[in-house]
Image 1 (cartoon, rainbow, N blue to C red):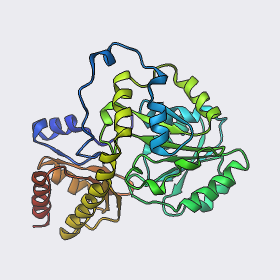
Image 2: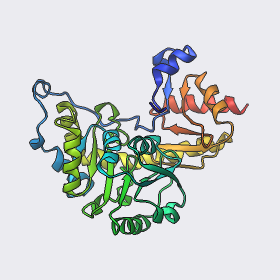
Image 3: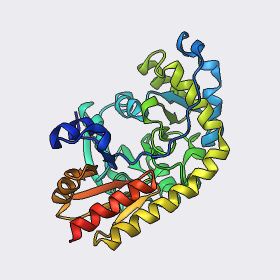
Length: 327
């Protein structure tokens, strides 16, 4: 199992700080999640049904003709490598480590691609896996370049897989509308922007033939009925979505400024996190953890990812801790 953010219970045990006393900034999840309404009892007593309207709600929200609901985008990340013969797979680096891990476990030859300029290596790959915006660096590559790379890969039967888990705050940059093209696969998630990581709902956007093969591999009922009920309503709540996008953008700018004021200028980020590259990453991570603030620490390159505080009290707590580090 690879390392991930959100290991709050482990941190509580390690540092001897009660679970409820932590400020968890390690995940990049919206701290002001979509407000889940009461779930009718009948939802819990029935198996999921594909005709419940979730697929259409997702197609409308993402602007894609064909969508497959899955148990979080992680389910697709693990399954997709098994739908192709073994080949050469370029994966953005640094990036969400589960992508390279899944392709490698499936027997593919995985090669890292630089997150700033992966295009030069496209010709050597059968599959290219990108993250838009990248996690953890926040790098976002031009849509025109991505479509050109896809055309090059598709012409020889290749795939471009684009993980858009953090894209919801900037939907204009998404490739969702182009997923009717062969070999273009987009992954989306309700966990980040909607703050519904616990529902474990994701979507794969691609042509119907590929989605059918993926559905057969995943088997029946991949998403729980209650999760489908919540997801359908969240995707239809356009008023909440429109209000949330500028709020997250403003909070991200505020976080970048707070870090800069304390001598920790972020090198990258997106609407849900800021990324700081520093050789002192491990030390800063530990010093904040001793104050009950959990960040995501990366070894290579040495760096930290800061998620967004969710309340003014949390902002003040982070500001105080950063000030103490600087003293």
